[in-house]
Amino acid sequence: MSQSAAAAFAPLPFELVYDDGEPLETDWHTLQLPLLRRLIRQVMAEQGRTDYFTSSNIFVYYSVEQAREVAEEVSNKLPERAFRGPDVFWVGGVDPKRERKVWIAWEEGGRLPDVIFEMLSPSTAKKDRTEKRDLYARVFGTAEYFMYEPETGKHEGLRLAGRFYQPIQPDENGRLWSEQLGAFVGLWHGVVEEKQDDWVRLFRPDGTLVPTPDERAEAERQRADAAEAELARLRALLAERGRG
Image (cartoon, rainbow, N blue to C red):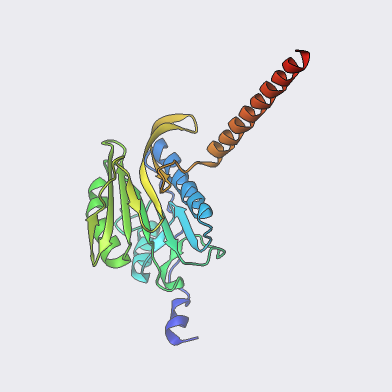
């Protein structure tokens, strides 16, 4: 093992923080984040891909200095200033079987998220559009950055060009194409766990909605019911002809 590789796995001189106990912003956020993660996994399954990692609301450490700052803030109960992590992220071309409590760049060959989603709130919108945008572009080198602000309904997508982001132009349905995921990112109005609202969803290249496991099960049930009804109709028709 090279000296640089050995240094990457050397013990840190402080305790790495895995969770600072801070709650998500709203009930909507607690449903949206895992929903989006499940949909990303479904898209990958449909593409036959397993070489990726996706997660929501976990820490992303891009440097030892940042990790030290987080640890100091938590241990000393200081205001949060150091970056914790994005709401949802995806990294392609990595070992899917590796156990990860957090994403630690120096243990991942320097890899950082290829796609990031942030769900903005009044308290985070400015930072997400300025400080985090700059961090994701210049430090992370994140290829695509998507933002959604529930309070205003504003949906934005950015793609990295050099060291700066350029807006992703929406299609005729207002959806944004993700080259990294091979899917459209768009809004969908409906019910998620008994909550009716607008949700960030993924759409296949043909425009069809990427379903959740519950939606897939319901579609299968409806198809089975329709097939059973058609079979009953044909049986009745044959019986009627037989009597004739």
